[in-house]
Image 1: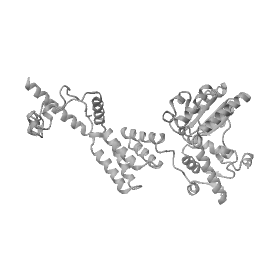
Image 2 (image 1 turned 60 degrees about the vertical axis):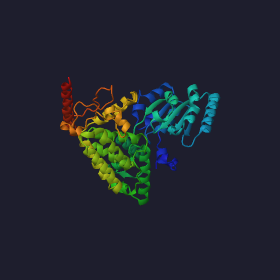
Image 3 (image 1 turned 90 degrees about the vertical axis):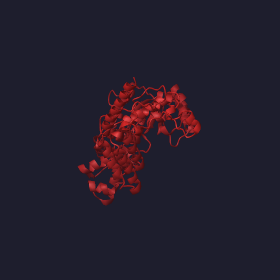
Image 4 (image 1 turned 135 degrees about the horizontal axis):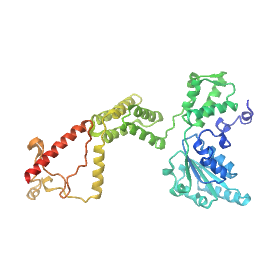
Length: 438
């Protein structure tokens, strides 16, 4: 066995293979390649506070450790899950001591910094401002929402990406080169299966390799194929956290695929979310919303189909009921699109918020009492069913002083093209009635 693994046999593979310098890091070349931000900072020996934002297993902790070593700085790691203000104060004391003892700078690394509340983040902010601490935070959550504005303004945010399939294959090759997979041979399908299961997460890939190695040694086999992996691997859910960025990014992709009339993409994102553990009832509600927002009256069947799909899921549950949601998503994607009703609703809501409370015109008021009738409530109201075309041409229904509006503008697609023709006909009747009164 390679000397590295003879010395570190008890370490998890992910820890044993952890890079110790930038050239050893796989992925994140947009940050660490020559003339990229982190490489330039190391070359210039100018540490700065930063937040490393990205999915699990892409190297956030590794980069923080490499930066600390490259700057010859004290490295104090904290986990926001287990640490509190007491731990922050102890870190500040250690930083003071290191500065006084040998003039060394201190890097305070806070893993999962999004779990620190406002008071905890405020506790080390003054020491970041003074330069006593160089802060490096790691988070899987959008720092715009989870990190205090004051701290965010003093830290550069770097976005880390999931590893590509090629980069994951490089990681497998490195494990083989280092002697971690002694006597194991992987065929192409097995490599593809491992990188697919890893889903861009280097730590997950290395854990899968450990499972594979253990199972292969137990069965005394050396040839690893896809069938063997399917039998022995325990595969976790894909990158997806309910309520986190991955969740909202994927529901946004689903909605935009429907709006963009791409049934295949809509089905892909729906299945991705179901695979990741999204609540099918939530997806059903969002599909109903899409039917009203993006299809509207261009195809009223869309509302009917999505509501029936939601009801079907309630009746059948998973996995049978998910098919109804899938077909609803396909229908929404291929249906004629109109946001005319959605736009009209938003415009009227905005108008009413800034307008005065205009009284109901007298002729439109209800008159259930004798006094109301004596006051003329409803007296001049024209009953549309008694008029030609079932329409009281020239009648007004908006408050006095408010000009006629055109908030609802139907599009020339689907059923709304017919609605467009109908409104044009009625408006012509109004114009004719106005001419007759002059």
